[in-house]
Image (tube, rainbow, N blue to C red):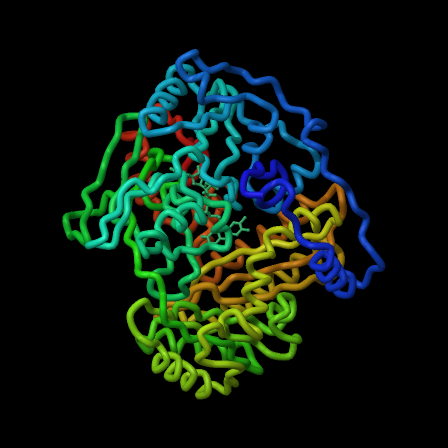
Length: 532
Ligand SMILES: Cc1cc2nc3c(=O)[nH]c(=O)nc-3n(C[C@H](O)[C@H](O)[C@H](O)COP(=O)(O)OP(=O)(O)OC[C@H]3O[C@@H](n4cnc5c(N)ncnc54)[C@H](O)[C@@H]3O)c2cc1C
């Protein structure tokens, strides 16, 4: 399986899928929820059946060896992995395929490809794993302004180049996928320990460009915390930031590029802060009758200075959907880890905080507790979930997630307002009630990062419009109630209307000025974060 190609439609590699039992489990839940006997199923077109527009440009001989306009390459780089991306794949709509896909081997190739794009007026779309759920890798260019779209896939740049054991840091190429990156660090007994749900099929460069959120629920929540320095290739040249454990020298150049989503330059490598592999663990699940009581326990833990590695709370329905509960109680998945010392006392104190809020621990202080009981069932569902979408969309099931962050003082009202707006939108869009669930992915002393899932039964032919109605209502509610349009899924093209409302206008002007300085022709990822 390791050598199989990534799918052009769906999650993971060709040949990978949810099992028939997993599919039956999910469909049975949906059948009961929507009160239907079954689902009309449509099949996505085979790769050979997809119609692609003719490429508008061909690479010069000097770049031909690292470029492709083959059917697979263009189809597999047309979309990211959002709900509407999957619907358009199902419909065989590949009108937005890039003209050329390039696979640079190093920063010099990246510079040469950007130069070529500049010389012919083509847009350049940096591409890591293509796991964007916000339209980050789909070009959507204005044909009157751009002659073509060149996707720049960094998959061939996946090596760990250097390890500094004393400082616990490594220089890593931006195209490294999660598993390959960790495998190269393992012989050094080091680890990055940044595990987004998309870990297997996303890259270091993509994580940095989108400020991804990993599995740590506290302290090291975003990839930002691990970036020591960067190398970035821009249309105006290459820049390298200084390796430092910290610096107070003015605004941080790293911070300008972290989260720049490919509009300012292509990140080609980074020095990353690493950790010792954990040897001590304590973890388990805690039950709460009430989600809001669980949220108060989370607040107590988040403000205690304990900093658990995992502190996820699932509401009762989310716990039920993932097999972590039966729908009658909320579940907190709690874990501590360390490469240095026993974490039992930390776990004990966190459990006291839970008991103070009527939490009932299911298991505690077993080295493998995070893989057992409710915590283990949730972990398993979390890993397998991404494969479900390509089997549910063909049944016209609308199932998606959105995530945000809010301060504790506003959380309870915020949660109720967002849930109510999303539930109402599902009923309005699909003609029947659906389901909205919530969990926390990350927690801070001053507030949680709530992550909502929603489910509705759509109609073939109307899926994108129905999804859009729900997504817009949910996003409007997030912004109106004071939250952010995204805590870790990035802005891309799809979150622009709400990002534009949330950021101060003068900051937008400053970002546009940075763009003009680094990319005066506006080649890089037009439409992401700012107007092209
Ligand atoms: C099933 C699933 C689960 C997910 N779980 C999480 C999660 O737990 N946490 C989380 O934060 N996100 C998650 N995401 C979203 C996504 O995985 C992240 O945004 C991830 O960081 C993207 O990495 P990538 O390598 O796939 O980048 P891509 O999707 O290829 O690109 C994302 C953006 O970054 C730009 N980009 C990519 N590489 C570079 C580079 N080297 N230089 C400059 N720009 C670049 C692209 O142009 C694009 O705008 C999930 C997505 C899916 C589909």
